[in-house]
Length: 236
Image 1 (cartoon, rainbow, N blue to C red):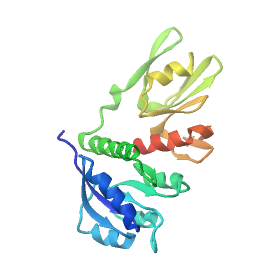
Image 2: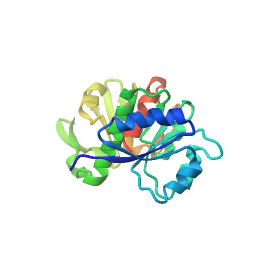
Image 3: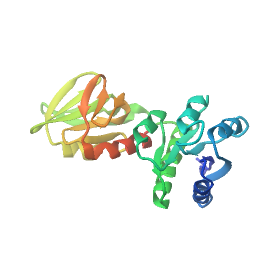
Image 4: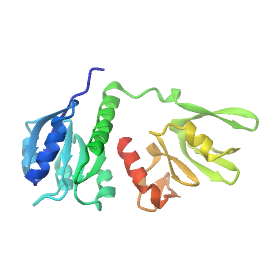
């Protein structure tokens, strides 16, 4: 695939904040600035005639918020929220945000967020690998059992044993969580608690204490919340 160039728009009611983001965009080789807007209404009208791949979007703006804007857009590009408030982080990812940047933005965080966006763009345009090629072997009852990763919901620690919960069945093996944590692809699986590794694609709902997979409530460690948000954003 040729080098990816994402067409970007910046939406922020602060001219100084727009200027700082614009500079970061212009310094990035894979980004092209195509529009700047200072409010949601202007953005909504502007996007009727301007095609963008990625929007750097403020949340708190007069009249219409960033969330209101997204509710009104029929075709949503990728979104990286840029805001001075951390309280909107969980809500932001209900909107399938690529990332959530807190002002003032460091160049390192900006580059990291853009990398996620580029990877998502490539995935959508190149196509995902065949799911049947993604599996691990797990030793169960003296035999090696093939476990397809797209069918694996989560893994639970049970003392000296590990329980595999799949779409088809459940089974227990004598092993450590650490051994499987190292085997599983980090972009698809996350250890959200000392006793649980979950498939990010299977998460249906989450809050600050739990995640839900197929109506099963699984505890979320307090110090893993930020990792979960970042992983879900990268996995969009």
